[in-house]
Length: 297
Image 1 (cartoon, rainbow, N blue to C red):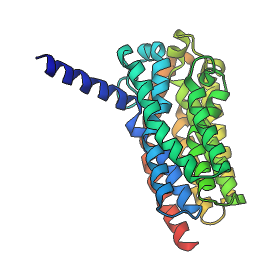
Image 2 (image 1 turned 30 degrees about the vertical axis):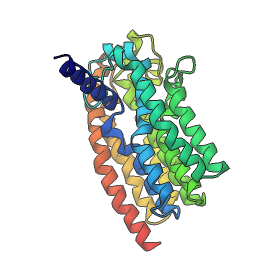
Image 3 (image 1 turned 45 degrees about the vertical axis):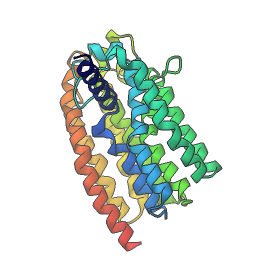
Image 4 (image 1 turned 90 degrees about the vertical axis):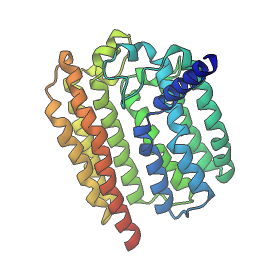
């Protein structure tokens, strides 16, 4: 009986730790690294495999696990937590989650440092620092309005930047335009995602770009950033500029919430859930475009 109880406890703990890494979002960091590495001239080699695996699971465990540990009070108040949008991490698994994040990250980081050079290591350091600074006590970039969205976007763009440096790729004008557009897309997405949490964050004393600007202005700021992202993609060359339609789709998706009041903030969750699935559709279309670019280069 005691053995069975222990096994049940371990299964529950594993489910909590894995759940805190947001499995639905794993692809959002692994894909940019893998695609950028190959497009920058890299092969399916050790660096590609190690980097893709790192940004698939350990990186997300660090990013979201640390967040779930130090955002526990806000998560308890948040009605959308407890499913694909993030678990409410039980207190008893906080230390385990931090240890799991460290133990899974260190070996991969060491390998990537050995496989890279000074520049790629510097980019990787910025990427990991942004992950820690976003949620860790004292730093808490997530509570610094505007910086929260910029840091969150760094979480997703930095794997692609790291990939280019690791593959000894060149930062040409089309590459820079694409990365800049991607960065704005990420900042816009984070800002919109923060709208649904205005009430929960204010209740827990947590600041964000949305708690400061309010729902209406934050949604409109996101719309503007999506529009500028589309403009920047026009500098990505042909056929890359076709991807300019992607941020326009997201602009269309969040536009219905442009007049949302703070009291209605939780209604934005409908748009956020659409955003999560829209990522899969847009990701597929971008993949087809990348294949065409690879075949025609």
